[in-house]
Each structure stands twice: as C-alpha cells, then as structure tokens.
Amino acid sequence: VTETLDMNRAIAETLDRLVEDSTDHYYNPYKRFEWVDALKDEQWWMSPALMSVHGTPWAEKLDEEQLMRLSKWESINFFSLNIHGIRELLIEVTRRIHTPGFEVASEFFHRFLGEENSHMWFFAQFCLRYGPKIYPDKALRQADVSHDQEVASFLVFARILIFEELVDHFNIRMGKDSSLHALIREINQAHHDDEWRHIVMGRKLVEQLYEPLRIRGDQAVLRYVDDYLRRYMVSSVQSLYNPTVYRDAGLPDAYELRTEVLQHPARHPYHESFMRRITGFLVKEGVISESPFGA
Ligand SMILES: [Fe+2]
Ligand SMILES: [Fe+2]
Image (cartoon, rainbow, N blue to C red):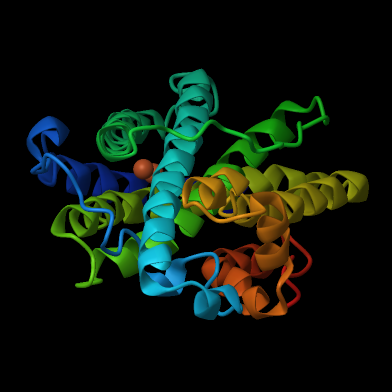
C-alpha cells in the first residue's frame, strides 16, 4: 500500500511539472509554421540514414535522384503513420479521461489531447499540401482479445508509448538534420519538443498500470501481455516499409522490393536501434521478456 501511495505521489508531482511545462510552451499550431507553396522533388525529404533502404544494396543501386524521390514518399508515409497513430491514441485517451482510475491524469490528458490534435493537423497539412495524399492505415493491428479492463488500459498506454518512442527516434534526428528543408526540420523538431512530455508521462502510466497485473501474478496474463507487445513492436517497425511508397517512387516490383529490404540482414541493427530506448525500459520493468529484434 505504501508503495502504491509513493507511486501515486510521484506521478502527481511529475504531472504537475509536465502540465506547467505544457502551459509555458503553448503555441498556436495554425500559425506555427511557414507553409511554402511547394517542395521540390529533388531534395532530401527524409534523412538518408533513416530511409528503409539504408544499408541495403538498394542504397547503392539507386542514384541520388531516385533516392531523393523515395525520401519524399517515405517522409509522406512517416507523417501518415503519425496521423493514424494519433487518431488511435486520441480515441483511447478520450475514452478514459475523467473516468475512475484516471482522475489524477485527467488534467494532463487535456494537454495531451490538445497537443495531439495540433500534431495531427500539421502532419496532415504537410501530407495534403506536398503529397498531396495521406497513405491509408494498412497496419494489421492485432486485437486485444483479453476482455480484461486492466489489461486493456495497460496495453493502450504501452502501445501509445511504443509508438511515441519510435516516432521520436526519427523526429530527434530529422529535427537536427541540416540537409533537410527548414520546414521538414521544423515539423520534426516541434513534434519532439512536445513528445518528450508524453514519453515521460507514458512511462509513469505504463509502470502504474502494470502494477496491478504484476500483483495479480497470473502468469498466463503476463505472458499474453509480453507476447502482444513484442508483436506490436515488430509490426510498428514493419509499417515503415510501405509497398505503395516504393511504387510512388517509381521503383519496379514494389512488393518484392518491400520484402527484400524489410528482411535484409543489414536492416536488423536499425530496427533494434529504432526501439532501443523503449526496449530497455520494458525489459527493465519486466513487461517484456526480451527484445523482439534479437538484440
Ligand atoms: Fe504527437
Ligand atoms: Fe504524443
């Protein structure tokens, strides 16, 4: 009981700090960026080292112009993934705000929902202006079949955290990459500037929501959660490889190409590095048994 109280107090303090920081950095998303009329195809839209072909023979086979064109569609795909990820988390957080169990977090959730709505808007703006398209959500998301409210809430916040950590890996790097157009850099940086708060809070929530499952000690439930999240991590990484992206970039045999780069051994260390931070956290907390990327 004392441990739970300490945990609640720690969370309340973190929340206060994050809410205050969010208020201090409040901005009008609709005035935040200078939307240029057009972005040239012949430029890097995504950092070459973050592209799906990086490290594979395709990075050599394609000339710079082809790689730049591919970077455009990978960038649109990355922002589209953000849009769909945000849609899901808005739904799930809205479902829980001001309901029993989330009283302490609700004030923070208001900031979170507001910020995510802004993010979804600027990602969509980018895709629709310069794509102009948003890639549809093709992720085959496994359903949570547990029918257990404690498990469901835990998995929701664990999924949100995994998604935000993956995206942040890209945002941090692209926000600093001077080879990218200032607008692309800015969007990535602005997103990271809000996301660190969500990640700090996400970790607290995941710890807190895992606690009742740990105490219950039902091995079948713990194994289910472990398995589910490791599969979710793998499918999140796979969504970075979209066959339509290769087709839009004008590359032949888009589906074969997708399979080839996704399974290329040179990509494994990248998958591991995209998820290194969150893997370390989930393993340390005992939520997952090992890295799904065979670290
Ligand atoms: Fe976001
Ligand atoms: Fe977020």
